[in-house]
Picture 1 (cartoon, rainbow over the protein chains, first blue to last red):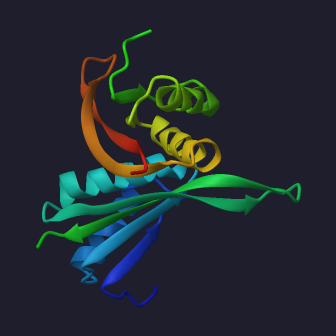
Picture 2 (cartoon, helix red, strand yellow):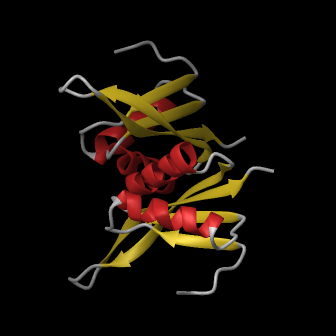
Length: 96
Length: 96
């Protein structure tokens, strides 16, 4: 387990949505984060939006979306080339 | 073909990414839109980000992301119930 600072990033991958929702709840409630950024790329982007929406609507009513950024990254392919993949970063913050 | 106003919405569904990129290019270049909003829900959210990134990076260098919103909608299921689905709206705008 890493030491959690006041800002925290959670990388969305292949686990079920609820695993990440629980990580968000832990970051705010147990570890004292003021902000949590959900990061995802490719097909996991949809899941990151699900995690953000479920977290703030169903579990953390004092948390809101404070920023969303999209971008692109180059990833190398097994064939030795590279291709672009879209990314998202959704920041959740405690309401003032 | 609908009459295009200065603001235009494109709903991202099951077609390939390039179909929507072409629709974005047409909206800006042929139909004179000042802003185009990409709307998607569920798994199509990732594709909406791909469309936005590919459009502004590869085809429309005078266009930028001016806003991103996420939300939730209730959709009815074939069984007669309803479930939540996440949504995204990404607005692309001509640079000032």
